[in-house]
Image 1 (tube, helix red, strand yellow):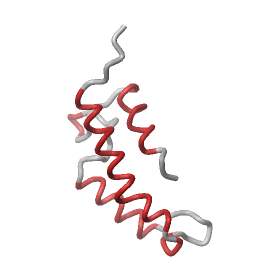
Image 2 (cartoon, one colour; image 1 turned 90 degrees about the horizontal axis):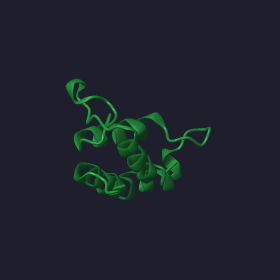
Image 3 (tube, one colour; image 1 turned 120 degrees about the horizontal axis):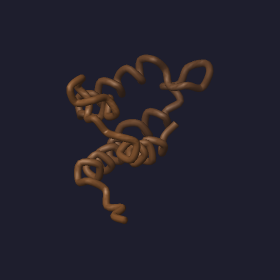
Length: 87
């Protein structure tokens, strides 16, 4: 059985890891970005969403015909592993 990930999945894994490190973790670390309940505030979330969309890191599980990347369960599992480094 071959457990090699497709190159596109590996590419997105690396891109997501870099995005989390560069964009998300600094926002999480700055308590000024948190709301009264300890969650990331809407303004900071909106900015992160816009950046993720601009970098093509949004709606990875959505089919290509609807503007996503069409990742299946394995591809999404790899992506979620990188995404889960943040809250």
